[in-house]
Length: 150
Image 1 (cartoon, helix red, strand yellow):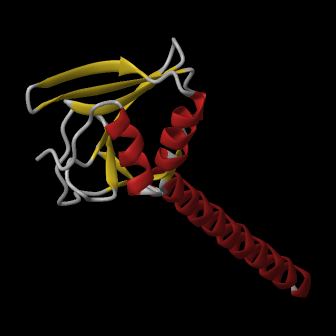
Image 2 (cartoon, rainbow, N blue to C red):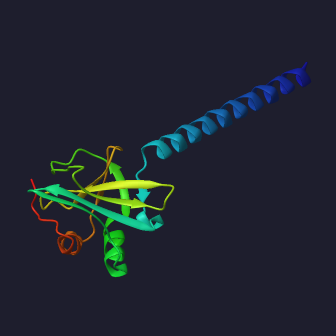
Image 3 (tube, helix red, strand yellow):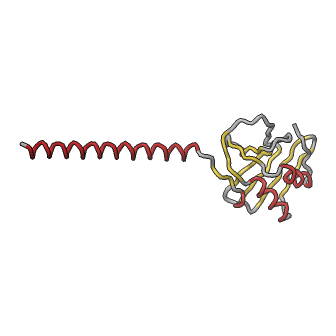
């Protein structure tokens, strides 16, 4: 009878350990999935072999490809960063945009039309912070963009 009580206690303890381990594993899984789903994602336009600029505003209809390697580097470096969901109070328009493409994949980014240091990743509801707004704007102005364009 003492053996049965001891064995029952061991089984009960083992069940408690299994239950605790199961709950811990479930919590880890929930935390991991939540982190993956809501975590900011990196945005890296370095994949692009072609960068197209569009500026349809103030009577200008600019649709050009950036060929200068230094300009490409400035554009890519200033739009590389962490993307996040937000609703900034900046003005964005698909008529003022930068499209990164490698022939297979294409991503369009709309820099804020005002002096805001944000850019919208088109059709995603995500935004990125422009690292150096003045440097990016200087390159875009070389191609005929005018800021502010609100």
